[in-house]
Amino acid sequence: MKSKLIFSSFLILVLTFYSCKTDKKSTSNQTVVSLEQKQEWAIVIHGGAGGITRESITPELDKEYRAGLQLAINTGKKILSEGGSALDAVEQTIRTMEDNPLFNAGKGAVFTHDGRNELDAAIMDGSNLAAGSVACVTDIKNPITAARRVMTNSPHVMLTGAGASQFAKEQGLEIVPPSYFYTERRFQELQEILKKEKNGTVGCCALDKKGNLAAGTSTGGMPDKKYNRVGDAPIIGAGTYANNNTCAVSGTGHGEYFIRWTVAHDISALMEYKGMTLREASELVVNDKLVKAGGSGGVISLDKSGNVSMPFNSTGMFRGVATADGKEGIYIYKDEGGRP
Ligand code: ASP
Image 1 (cartoon, protein in one colour):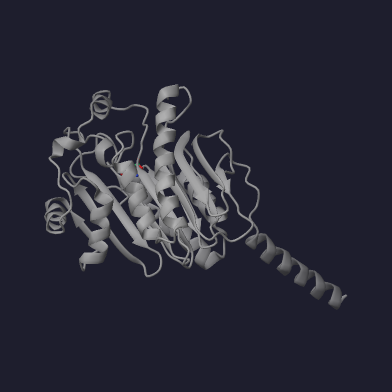
Image 2 (cartoon, rainbow, N blue to C red):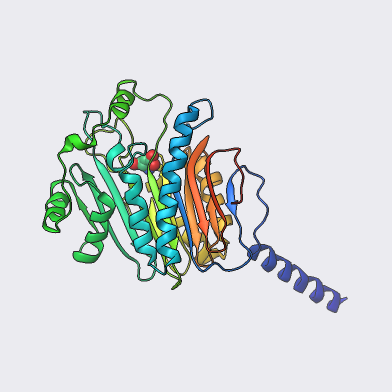
């Protein structure tokens, strides 16, 4: 009797351990890539989450978005496959999307309530937890590069507004007149006060051949924002996080919730302290905790084995993935396939 009891307790323990370590099949409608073998390198990107449906996007715009996502993926893929660093991949990949007026970052940034463009960006190195970010900047062409310079060339983590611009100038980065960020489409969007949000923040997570993870996010923030509002993207642990021991995460969505629920770090913490897989942790935070909180959006996440997760609780999220074994995919809508 006693030995039977010991045996069944042992069995329960083994089963519990096993179920924690195994990726369960998702019942929700997300893009999830679960890779059997460890990847030499991997990249995952997002171009924002929001009210994105087949009805709200014309076929032409659909094509343009896919081309923009593909260009971004190709950029990162080339760097990583040639042995470049995760940080370089993240920075250069995000720059392509910052220069693309379709995305709400850099050139295509949304407008504030006062008709200005204020940009936020962050980057994080998972190998040593170094991080840099800029917030509320109005004249730096590529905020992700400024964020990286803050990380590598300053003793600080976060610079804002005019001070961040001054630093970028001192670093020799390209400064543009604030009117550079004007796009007719975004301006009209503001005029309509964007009832159905269609955000396009950009983000990238990369794993390089040395096994290092990095994450970056760049955004124009929420349309119609006021008072120099800063969102989650430049806040380490909220919209951006990377740690070689756990994962790299970039978020997109209603920033106030991502800040209060420390979304990116929460995913990492669930892996570190609860032993969850990347997918379990990402799904729990985005499709359970955030949903209960009322926060819409999604994340892209990547672990050190090259497993990728891209859950979102909005109607769509621009996203793409590529891994060393040749798997690749670009997705926009909720009903699109799960594996590249
Ligand atoms: N998370 C961004 C912010 O709140 C917006 C977005 O992702 O669309 O600033």
